[in-house]
Length: 325
Image (cartoon, rainbow, N blue to C red):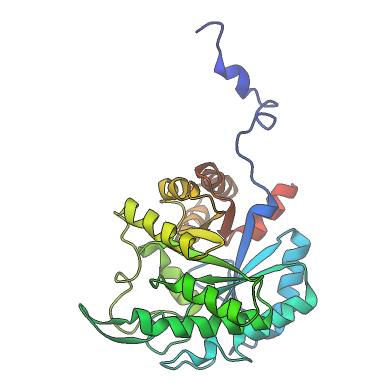
């Protein structure tokens, strides 16, 4: 009791780093990257200042720069030059992501290559698999799309991916992908499931970045509603039972309670600080309304404090630089 107990003693400036309960390091970070098969030069993403769609020819240069900065893992998204209803570019042997994986592995074999495993960037309709008539009208067909996910997973693994990350929120996707990987000899490839992915308005800038807008409907039929904490937990619990190696919460910043819940399952948890979170911080910083560096570090520390083991963030390269200063 006061005056013998004074918590302010713990907050002397030189004591704060020594007594920090939560720490942020370079090994926590995963950098998302966009590669555009049709781009000859880097294309600035207007809604995400500082982020680009990279041409395939620059894959080696980009991964080498990130590795030199201290980043040990990247998450790859591809924009094909052509799209169709079957998302054939997603599992083509010479698809955009398959080319990028091979180039990165050649330049930087120690980098952990994670591939977004979905079809929305590759389908002409923008949905995450095969579409057809559902109970509520036209929408994503669950079981009919699982085979497509298997094809994509095997193709990415054969190109050299270390981790495949299914983001389509299909029921049974982890089980189907794990079976396909093992059947084709890819027992060592991990599955990082977008296991608790919410139907969020924060994905808006990403749709420009990945050219993944949908031609009809929305994705509320296969992504979790923001109101449902138990449902989000059950999604991750089921994916863990199906064989996921890593679970994910997306978006991250507004769902710290979900991160804490899912951490109890006992698997590593990744938190995805999504495009909308990035763009809001960037926009406010450009207006001079907040300090970008301080807000970014605080936001990532809060995710670690909630229980996240891995942080997927577009600020990854900036954070590495700030940690060195």
